[in-house]
Amino acid sequence: MIPGKLLEILKQDGVVAIATLGKDGPHMVNTWNSYIRISSDERLFIPAGYMHQTEVNIAHDPNVLITLGSSKVEGLHGAGTGFLIKGKAIFITSGPDFDFMKATFSWLRATLAVTIDSATQTL
Image (cartoon, rainbow, N blue to C red; front, side, top):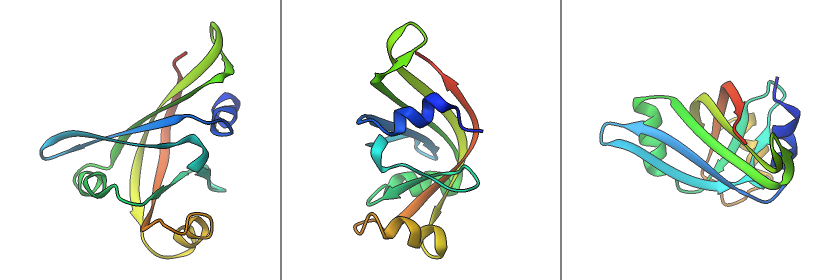
């Protein structure tokens, strides 16, 4: 189950960092909190316009680390909170999950779908 605080963060402006590991080492890309959608089975759907190295890395190792946060959501010690998400990712380039995201983000070339293994509040 996705924590309520994480759902609150996704409604706010903020930067998301996505880390992958490939043959050449770690790689990071960014997106926005407001771009992330949640599927009915609680996967995170992230529109991918570029993310070419991310896609190469996920083909090598599907594990991802994602951090996101918002200064506007109450945290563990006052204003501001964040999460570390660990999960497994795939790139989807056709089918209903792709079409769902393409309807909102006309510029995407793929949907990055992340199955959450853990979501830990860090702030």
